[in-house]
Length: 508
Image (tube, rainbow, N blue to C red; front, side, top):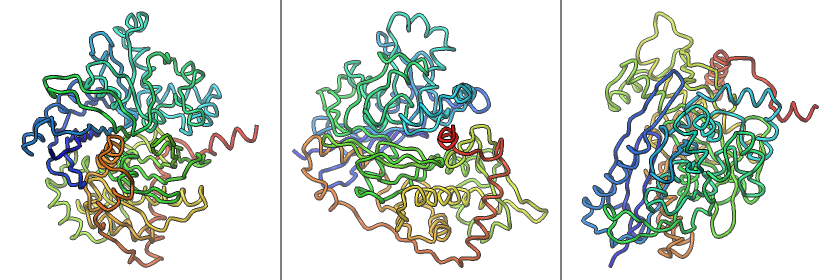
């Protein structure tokens, strides 16, 4: 019997279920969006139960579409939006509050208080992360502090905390497995990337009991078996789990130090493989675990961009400047220049290299001649400007100049954006021929763990050549445009750019 791997790709915008055969071919795919909830300015939430319902729905639909029975599945892989925080009752299996999404800024003041108390060095040195509301720890702390129904459950030891992968593993295994992988654990602000374990000092700092946290495993480890007879009549192994951005890095086969990719999604993640040792940035990049495989951990440097595709969606949905992506492409072609207009998409603050949760979005440089096309173009171009910020910083921090940028994610399907990105970087950009790179990274992990494939060389043969984009912009024009972006970005910061916290610490 032909065997398939089922990938659950749970992203910020929705959930996909993909069926992949042993040749690496996607034979069926179904998707479902979930609600985006904004209860207060700067707050973003998802319903964990709605997400799990969408997992079940898309899995059923994908199996039906392919005409495949669950018995034909060799393994289940999971890739997920990272940092988004869930707290649930281990006895009922119900969340005590909505999932607090990575974009949510409600804990900015809590992080600022910790910074004022001199704790940034502690967090940064142990986790490789900035002290920022982007990451999970302060979100879990908020639930434990502000949700009244959680307090008695906490006292009774009934609460569990996890990122979306842990929540899905718990539900799929019928509450038998509470686990996460190294990539997701490294995004919580509670995981020590040097000892590869939860850190008691950090747990105390954020007020999150260690007993609530999941077991941490390698990405290709076994995560237990399904125990949901309504979905899978027979037990199936879960054996590939990885955060979405790291999944894309693995899916792009960026296996050597210095190889980098950008995943263009709701936000954009620019990740560079740095090998077996963590590289700590002094200027706004975060250190991440790229994956754990075969008993070995690989590290990465990451630039976190909070808003990219999300800003284009905002221009469509909130301003009503276009209705379809076909119309978007037409507007971009009819507006070949931004005419000095820049959109700085700080809707939920700015990430790397600024890390300013209090920055707010702005459209700058408008005149009476500014039209809809200029604003739409400014939204699309803002994605590429932020990626250049990241790429230049990575080259400086590692001493390794980028030779090529691998691109994936939904927005990478826009050829005008990809060409502008190549022009702005003065660098070759290769857009993956595979649309679902995060899911494929998880599939490769699961397939290796389940024995479907024996080596990375076998997987490398699956890859189709990507779409290349070569730089074609005059150097003076490139630098003129980028200087305009830098000026626009600086104008929205809540305060002048401060020296990095580690530099301040080193001067003490």
